[in-house]
Image 1 (tube, rainbow, N blue to C red):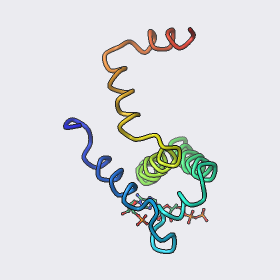
Image 2 (image 1 turned 135 degrees about the vertical axis):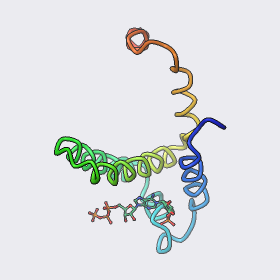
Image 3 (image 1 turned 45 degrees about the horizontal axis):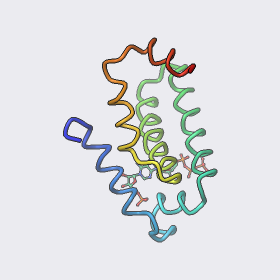
Image 4 (image 1 turned 45 degrees about the vertical axis):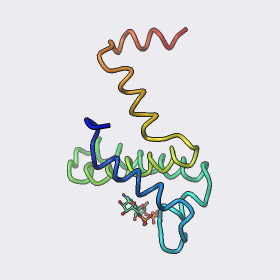
Length: 108
Ligand SMILES: N=c1c2ncn([C@@H]3O[C@H](COP(=O)(O)OP(=O)(O)OP(=O)(O)O)[C@@H](O)[C@H]3O)c2ncn1[C@@H]1O[C@H](COP(=O)(O)O)[C@@H](O)[C@H]1O
C-alpha cells in the first residue's frame, strides 16, 4: 500500500469507521443505510455532474466534482462489500500490460 495515495486510504478508513454510525450524524452512514442501489444511483449522479464540468471545461468545478465522484465511488464499493484495496489490486495487476492486450483478453 506504500505507493498508494494516502488520501484514499484515509478516506476508506473513515468510511469503514462510519459504517453503522448514526445516519443523522454521518452522511456516509446515511447513504450506506439506504442500500447498494441508492449508493450506485448517487455515484451515477455525481459522475454525470463531473462529466458536465469536463465537457464545459470548468476545471475548478471538475476538481470539486471529481472529489465527489471518488467519495461516492468508495461508498458504492463499500455498499457491496468490495474494498478499495480490491480495485487498486486490479489496477496493479494491469500495470505495465498493454491496454489493447487487456481489451482483447476481456473478449474471451
Ligand atoms: N468526502 C466526503 C464527501 N464528499 C461529498 N460528501 C457529501 O455528499 C453529499 C452529496 O452532495 P450533493 O451535492 O449531491 O448533495 P445532496 O445533499 O445529495 O443534494 P441533492 O441530491 O439534493 O442535490 C453532500 O451532502 C456532501 O456533504 C461527502 N461526505 C463525506 N465525505 C468524507 O467522509 C468523511 C465522513 O463524513 P461523515 O460520514 O458525514 O461523517 C468526511 O470527513 C469526508 O472525508
